[in-house]
Length: 289
Image 1: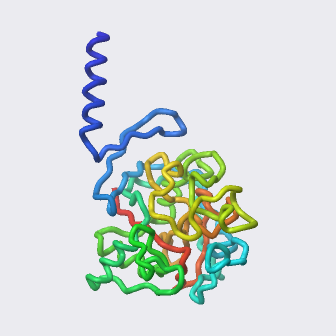
Image 2 (image 1 turned 30 degrees about the vertical axis):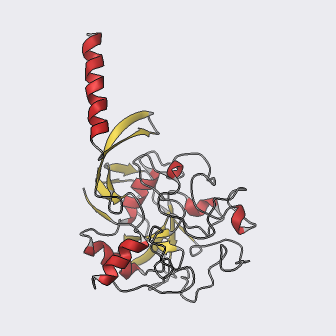
Image 3 (image 1 turned 90 degrees about the vertical axis):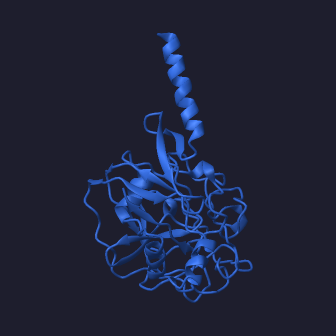
């Protein structure tokens, strides 16, 4: 019996190593690992987020993305000075039900890159975003997340890729899970090893005392310790991300400008003025499971 069990384990391990589209991880509420299928290449990789009962809706933060101190220091972290920076909406979205089941869905592992969005512009399927200071496409930062995009820019790109924007409740399912994690990675507080936010590099106030190494956006996936149990990267920090909430303009996840840990919490929802675009806002795509 022991020999048969060992042989079975060896075969399973071999299959996992041979298949690059299977990721093994620890599911933090139970401590047990499970296999998560991944589709696509590096720029288009997705994970299947399982059906999830979310215990509580996200709460709407009163401020627009970016709440760092406005010392700017050459256009680095702090409140964005761009004329197109979003303001809070006067009409916050209606909250979700206190408990709802979110069906399984596919979600991009990484935020959409500036390089991928540039390809959409060249194909004529997307409009070029603003080319202001801090905008990644204009700066040719191809591996960084696209930013300075409106909600309609994000929707057009996802349609071009045969996808759609994540729904607001899907975002909560991916970031908070059924156990209501306070952060996408779990219960540990934000740190410079887990996300790109306002650390020592942006002065006081800051979210954590050390520097995360990036004054603005970081290349996507630079903080693997901050990934969700399903393997989704940068759900907190780097750029806040557009989600679909009917006619409302909202973003999730916080950005490199945020100094308040609540802004990068798994259930934080922030309203943006209709048509708003900013260096602190990007997006990722999803599709039905």
